[in-house]
Length: 160
Picture 1 (cartoon, rainbow, N blue to C red):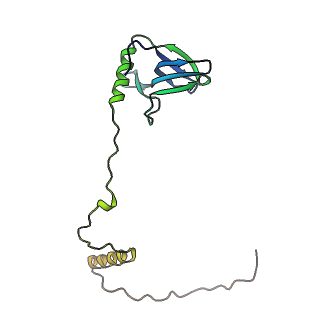
Picture 2 (picture 1 turned 180 degrees about the vertical axis):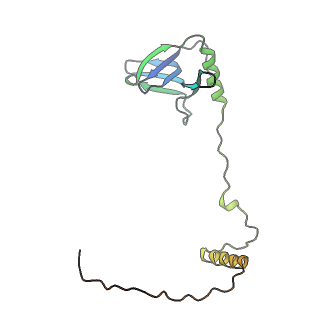
Picture 3 (picture 1 turned 90 degrees about the vertical axis):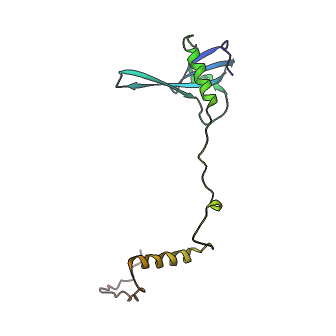
């Protein structure tokens, strides 16, 4: 985990994001940050103050180290000593968080109590129609008459 003697920094990226992190390595082109946490401020109109939130730089990755091109960084400054314990607590809480997806039932695990055999789509449709007829008290379907053409206008031989 994070050692309190690490070099803690705050960075501002050209995208506008502010990030607290541990500075691990740096050269002329790149900077390596560990456990970067994006800091956002949101106005709280009820208390007339700003609310500060923090979340991992890349929520969908389990990587702890990121190499950032310096062209994407406006500045890197040492993190104020007052914020170091808060940063360490945020990282620790995030490391203990486990994301689990709600398990969805598989089709083969579903049980069809009133059907012993899987029916085809046409059989399912016929069965559904029969059930609906029984519910609404409809007897056999009436034979449909062919629709009559009332107005017929003969076209011409125009080719477009």
